[in-house]
Image 1: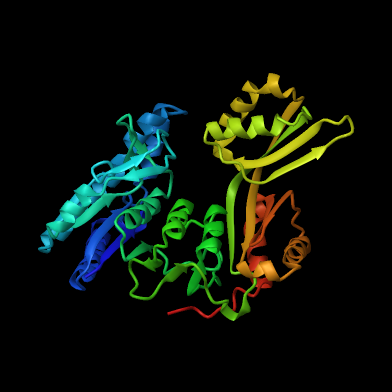
Image 2 (image 1 turned 90 degrees about the vertical axis):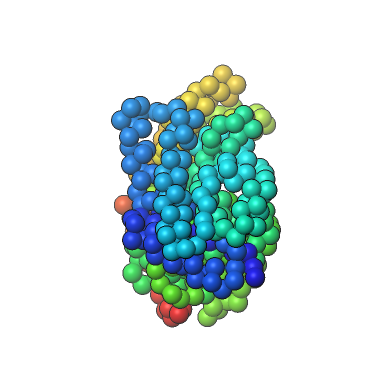
Length: 409
């Protein structure tokens, strides 16, 4: 007998029929002799619908109350799934994030898990129950409900697996595994048999929606065996592990992309040593994620600073910079929207020079201007015009021979 954590996303529990299908998958694991902790998201698009309701009330809803609102979606799912299991004769209990002992930092909308009290979970498992936990949520030290950010149910599942020393964590979704790029947009994308933690972490940070970045971090740090699988198809998924064999000697193993990117440029910034520290410290305090950063010194020895953010963070970022204007003594701020980020990822890039050059050549051939660039040992990211995003992904996917990988089964 082992302990398995299973996570099912919103599309997997989108209606009653799908919830019954999920119940069948859980029963299969239970009948193999495993104890089961199950983490679920809100049904289908219900979170989006709740966000829309809030926007009808206020264009900038209070973050604490948003957390109170959005966590109701998962509570509906856990109760229905527990009912479906009980109906088939399998004892099940549904628990909210706080009932499951998940404690988070005091941040609303994008909190991090700081501790998990497993006493209740272990007690319910000891009774032979299948434990259904609401993903995406926890409780602050002040006793307020918090959420982990979009995709946070993945983090809930892997964090529970780590806290309970589970034998495995399976992430069930609407695709059969991790693909070379998003198969919903690139039809010749192919499933990978395995991906390293580092590669998956880069892909997740860069826009691949199949796994939440924090979930990959937990799995890597606590060495949790992780597999991304289909909730409807009975086939092997993609294993996320420490080291992987290079499939067909692939240098690039995946392409990630995301739209709704904004480039902000701070012009005439004071050339003091503390200017950059002030800007990025203040942005961090306000939980604004900054990605690609470019700095240049101009003729008058002042500094121009450009960085990319998500469109949704633009208003908050401008407020932060305005509050710092006297300390920074900059001239003005320019913003450019309608941008996207396209990235290539692969651990083989470490020992193969010229990968970035090939990427730039491909984009040049497609008449796709590059506005910003960022690199690491295993990735190259470019910011381009949003309208050319999918064209760029398709060209890169073909040029790096990712279409030729046979579908795993």
